[in-house]
Image 1 (cartoon, helix red, strand yellow):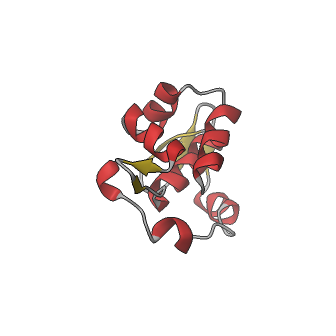
Image 2: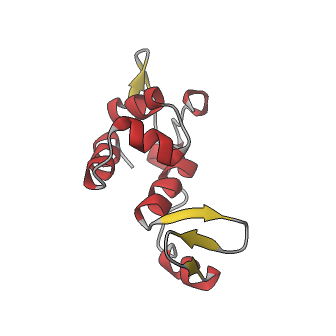
Length: 104
């Protein structure tokens, strides 16, 4: 996920930077770093766990207890969730290679 894609994700949900930070469990300033793609002049990539959290938020997942995911209106079967993320590239080397974990 590139900075522009992260910003497009946020805006597609109608989130402010503050809303996105709250939904992802990070600080608003980190959202700004991810959207800009840098922090203090150094490249910042969006880590895998944030990309997956974006997917979960977009899918309406509000909680996960290790077995089942919950949404505002239903429980999602783990097998259905597996099928939904089957094509997610967990080794997005362009993003992971320079991920700045300290920003989160």
